[in-house]
Amino acid sequence: MARAALEHAELNLRRVLFVPAANPPHKSGMTMAPWEDRVHMVELACAGVPEFEVSRIEQDANPSYSILTIERLLAAGEGPLAFLIGADAFADIRTWRRWQDVIRLVEFIVVTRPGSDYDAPSGCRIQELRGLDLPVSSSEVRDAIARGETQAPIPEPVFRYIREHGLYR
Image (cartoon, rainbow, N blue to C red):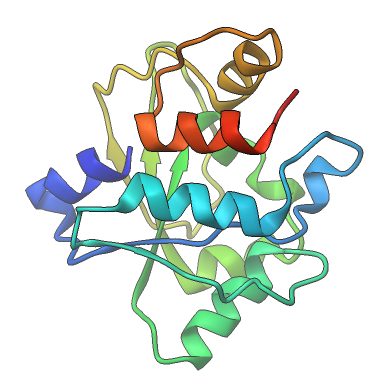
């Protein structure tokens, strides 16, 4: 998604900032890799792409609400901000903490899949990125690793890191 967004000229992106969530409230109770491991995997995945940057702004966040991260980024001088998100996740925007503030502070780049549908709140600034073939979700990748599969559609250095650190078993 990030590479396609960067290459899509109409979006006019200079860089893509990856912000691993320290304590995502919507994933409580799920088995997750520790935050430091997730940050390191993102760093491995972004290696070699100068327009990709990994942020540790969430390092002390508890819990990691998008609005708080957006406010931290803006206070640090970042901006204007565009929030790259899949249509399935964007469909739940009204369930987010202070979602009205989120849509006021950022523009969304919504990546759609065939058959995906969402209802954008009034006043929400959206650009769509269509036509991406995203054949697998992150949940499916984690499930495949948990089953012991020896390949996954992720960068090889990330897969090797996961195996070496025994993540997602």
